[in-house]
Length: 159
Picture 1 (cartoon, helix red, strand yellow):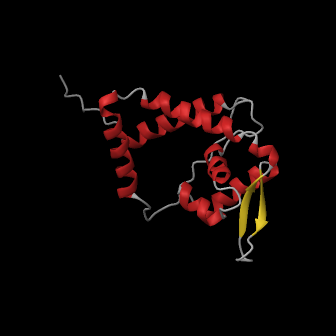
Picture 2 (tube, rainbow, N blue to C red):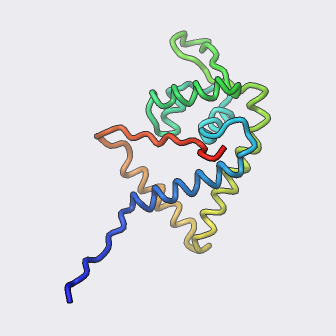
Picture 3 (cartoon, rainbow, N blue to C red):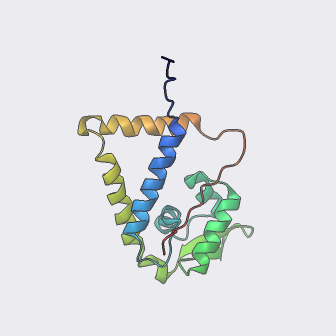
């Protein structure tokens, strides 16, 4: 009988699956909103209202400036944010949440917290802190890498 080769499950496949599951659950929780993506970026802007530049948003979300431009364009077109001239640096803009956007911030924050709880509930309570610490360490140690630029752009498919 031929020997069966052991199956390999790359971490990337598992992380991709978890990412899709996470975004699906989060999107479902926020399906009544007039936006269907970039919830976390909007939440970051909202929590730094009028004090955050696109450069800083890129640093926080760990994405590149080109993708940040798409996010800002989308959120601006949806009426959730506006760009205001920076009072000290005329070359940059500060991102400001509009009244329309502000009313959705609590729902987004609640959905982020609830979605995180769904995922962390799959981890035993005594290991949860260690797991979150280790996964954060992994992301920080690997950090930015040289190579092709990868963008995870998503949108709701079932509208």
